[in-house]
Length: 451
Image (tube, rainbow, N blue to C red; front, top):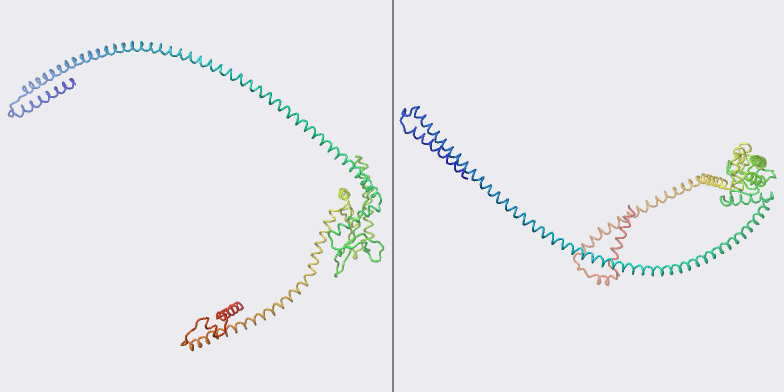
C-alpha cells in the first residue's frame, strides 16, 4: 500500500510541474521565455523527478526490509508453533497408541474367550448332533432293511408267479404249436393230392370273382368254344360286337410239387438244384398255358387271350422273378395272375363294364330328355294361359275396386257411418276385415303369377 501511495505522489508532482510549466508559458508575453529559461526549467524538473525517484527507491527499500523482517518474524513464529504442535501431537499420539494397544489387548482377550466359549459350544453341539445322527441312521437302516426285505420277498414272489404264468403260457403255446403242426400236416396231406390242390385254387378264384363282379358278369364250368366238350372253371362275360358277348376264360392251376421242390432247393442253398427246379416249374407252366390256349381260347367266341390263375403270391412272385409272364403271354397268349393282381384286373374290367353301360344308356337318356322337353313346353304354354287369365282377373278387380267403389262412395257420402259391431250385426257379417284381406291376398297372388 505504501508503495502505491509513493507512486501516486510522484505522478501527482509530475502533473503539477507540467501544469506549472504550462501556466508559466501562458502567463509570459510572447518572446519573453528564451531557450536558456526552458533549459533551466527542464533541468529543474529533471532534478525534482530524480529526487522523487530516489526518495521513492529509498522508501521502497525500507518497505522491502520491513517486509522481509516481518516475514522472517512470522516464519520463525510459525516454525516455533509447528515444533510445539509437533511435540504436542507426538506426545498425544504416543498416549493414544498406548491406549489403543491396551484396548486391543483387552479386545483380543475378550475375543479369545468368546471364541473358546463358541468352540466349546460347537464341540458340544457337534457331539450331540453326531449322536443324534447316528441314532437316526440306525433307525433308518433298520427301517430300510425291513422294507427291502419285504420288497425283495414281494418281488421274488411276483417273479415266481410271473414265471409260472409264462411257463403255463409256454405249455399252452406248445400245445397250440402241436395242434398247428397237426393241422399243417393235415393241410400238407390235403395239398399233396393234385385234385385237392386244384379244388383249393378254384375256391379261391371263385371267392375273388364273387366279391368283385356281379353274378351275371361271369359263369362257371363254361364251354367257351361251341361244340367243344372242354369246360373252363370260370369265364367272364365280355361285351362283343353287335351287342353280343364273348368269354374271357380263367383257369386255376397250382403246381404244388414243383413249387415245393423249388423251396427245398432254396433251403439247401444248392444253386444247381435251384436252377433245375426253376426249369421244371417253367416246363409245367408252359404246359398249363398251352392247355388253356388249345382248350378254351377261340376268337371270336372268346377273347384273344386267357388267364392262368395262381392261388399263392409266393408262386406268382417266382413266376415274375423268372420272367415267365412275358414268355407265356407272347408264346401262348395267356396272362398269369396272382390273388392281388387278379383283384386289380377284375376291378379294371368292372370299370370298363360301367363305362360301357353308361354308353349304352346314353341314347335312352337323350330320349328321356326329349320327352321331358316336350312336356315342359306344354307346361310353359299352360302357365302362359294361366298368367293371362290371372292378369285379366286382376284388371277386372282393379276396375271393380276403383270405379265401382268410388261411385258407391259418392252415393253414400251423406250417410252417417256406424261402428264395426253395429255394421256387422246389421249386415250379418262375422268380420268386416275379411273382405279387404281377401282382396289383398288375391292381388298379391296375381302379382306373383305375373312375375
